[in-house]
Amino acid sequence: MKDPNCIFCKIANGEIPSRTLYEDEKFRVILDLGPATKGHALVLPKEHFADIYEIPADLAAGAFEIGQQMAVRMRERLHTDGANLVQNNGEAAGQTVSHFHLHVIPRYKGDGQHILWKPGKASDQELDAVAETLR
Ligand code: 5GP
Ligand code: ZN
Image 1: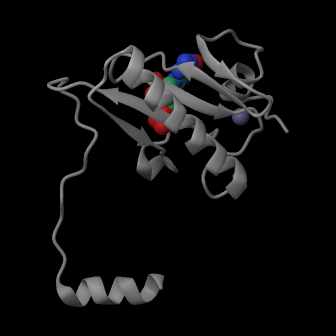
Image 2: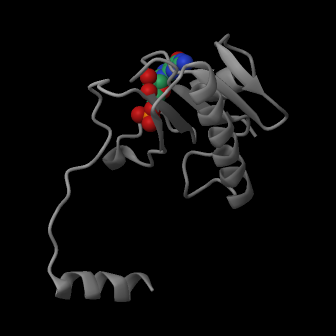
């Protein structure tokens, strides 16, 4: 299943060349063209699913498994100090390409990147209410 207008479909299926770090039947891992840090990679399923709401659970799990392998490889070969595995869904969450992808962002001490959120505040009542909604 491919979307003819989707750039990540074309990259994942080899129609547009990319710096491929890993490939198997279901996934391609490429270097991000606008890297947050050295080695920033994207895990792309070859099949088109827009986001976490559409992708089958086993494929999402597979993407995370490959993300883990890449993070380990980066630690060994790039001597990283950590990694952020980030997966954006929807414009509100910063998704700019509507083809599911998992970012593997290597982190280096003092790299100056900010991939964390600003902690908020919530009352006990608010926490109880949202917990009840989500249970
Ligand atoms: P999002 O914001 O949707 O989570 O992430 C999209 C990512 O794809 C961005 O980090 C952006 O730099 C990267 N990107 C966008 N277009 C291309 C492309 O054509 N090739 C590669 N390798 N990365 C891309
Ligand atoms: Zn696609």
